[in-house]
Image (cartoon, rainbow, N blue to C red; front, side, top):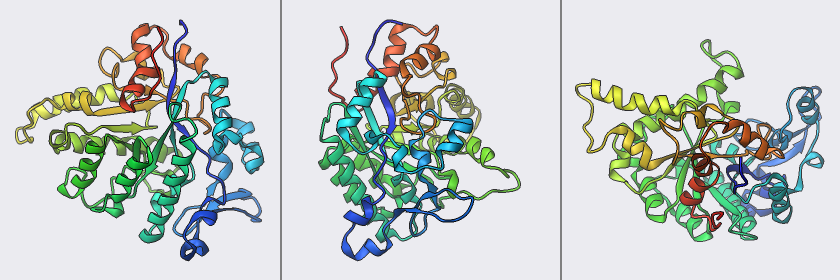
Length: 371
């Protein structure tokens, strides 16, 4: 594979453990989410905790590339085992260079857990703190550091925080996919969200539900069962948006399936058209369902060779490679080698779209193409 530019469309920051303690308005600080050292025998020594938050083992969010016994040993550590590039933008650019990456789209790590908080007032205050912090981080080099803010659906119909994120220079918003909401995403009550993002040019990242907050059931009795299931929650949400006419009403809206792999998408796109044609009372749309997906839906993946292999069916202009750095699934610091393996047999121009140009177009990243 010849030399080419690479953009990670899904990487993560490592928020300081005292971020919310230090930055929340004083009236909220007593209940501020924080990292604590747990003295509980047999448990993770460092955890992120807060009201309504399922305790999160901190070491898991900076376990880049580890697995097996090495990962189990790593989970006993705290921030001393983390790469400082998680919170220091100067160090971040160094790690990008080390991994052969020219830019990253940056998501939260600890902050995503805040989307499960039940105290809406405290939750919104916490999200404001995070959005300010990531905007400051990315301001160090906006061409290489592309920030994605956090938004809670509980705030609807108020979308002022999204408007604020746009003014801060963030390029997208993350929300959690859910199959438990009483109101489907195609309902008009979600229209303020779709409208403000379409008008502001902010992509909406639909992140899989957090397994840590999901109950085990007889049908899914293990965490492994839940991890397989959550991808289908995203699929279900996107299906409703297509069939429910969201993309017909908001043609400029861009939605990203974030960190849900892509090997399943080609078949899903095919079935959208097939099933829609076979259901007599299906809502009629001006375009085929697959055409809305090609126009409005994007998807990130890392180390998933099935996705690139189906490029002739779907994905050439929709899939976006990601390193997931510094999480355990990360390909860092061997991303170029993984890309070469995953894209074996894929044409060079298609590879370039997926590893760089699609993300560059979606987020208007000011990196000039090679050549």
